[in-house]
Length: 80
Image 1: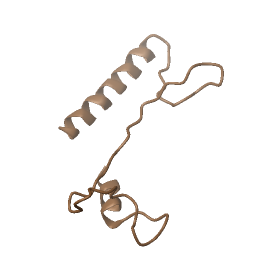
Image 2: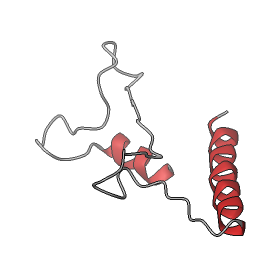
Image 3: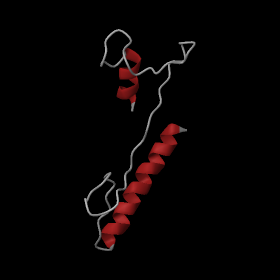
């Protein structure tokens, strides 16, 4: 269940931040907070396919307007 997973990710992130703060530390989930240290990130990748299309094409881009987001892609983004 995607909603349960999202809740668990936020709970873990906030727990880590809280524990770090109690020890006088700060936790960051930035991709690369310092140029002198290895990167770390908290990010998600989405794959959104059109199940109404027999080829199940990527549903984000608008087929008629290059560089634009489709109506279904826009609705997906609004929902997250």
